[in-house]
Length: 43
Image 1: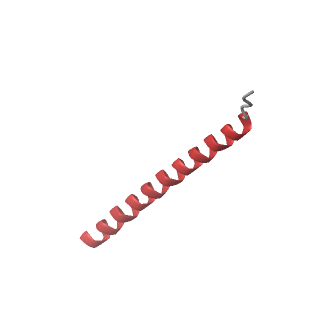
Image 2: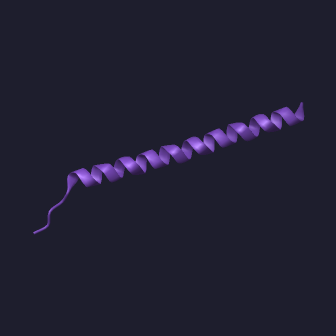
Image 3: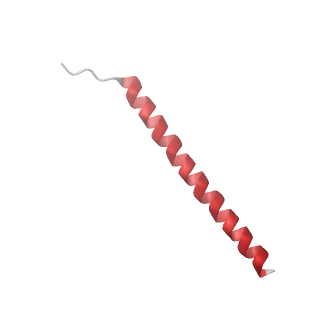
């Protein structure tokens, strides 16, 4: 008999979503930081 734990799957989906959001936030912040740094150097 196979018992499927719905709560565990939801938690893993939430962790995956939060990790994805974290990675996107880091990439966006890094891009903005680099662009601002380049703009300052060009002035």
